[in-house]
Image (tube, rainbow, N blue to C red; front, side):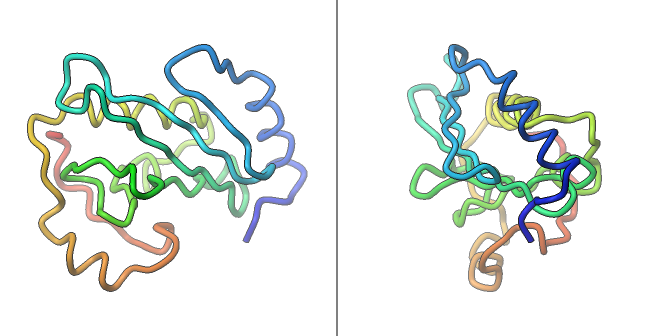
Length: 149
């Protein structure tokens, strides 16, 4: 369900008005409830020189509910918490979501997750997950057991 309630629309509008496209995250709006954020891997990390694109879809009752966030293919980093279909296993996108978080803070968290990763590898269950999970990552109950990368 697309975010259409008054609270969601007001919050999305406020974040859009505050967005600064001169930093490391470049925003483009596909639809009022679907944003794209482009960014590069941080210098000095294993992702330096790589370009990534996130798709953020505001669903349900944003900001009370987390937006749907996934990498746009084919620009999907190889990372232990990112599936090859673009789904991201990150606790703030699920059980640890807070309405105080913003799209920018989500982007910072994802960039930080990438920057702290010591090796490029897919999640151990990537093939099974990708074969069985189509569409939205919001229907997945990820197990957040590894915060080391």
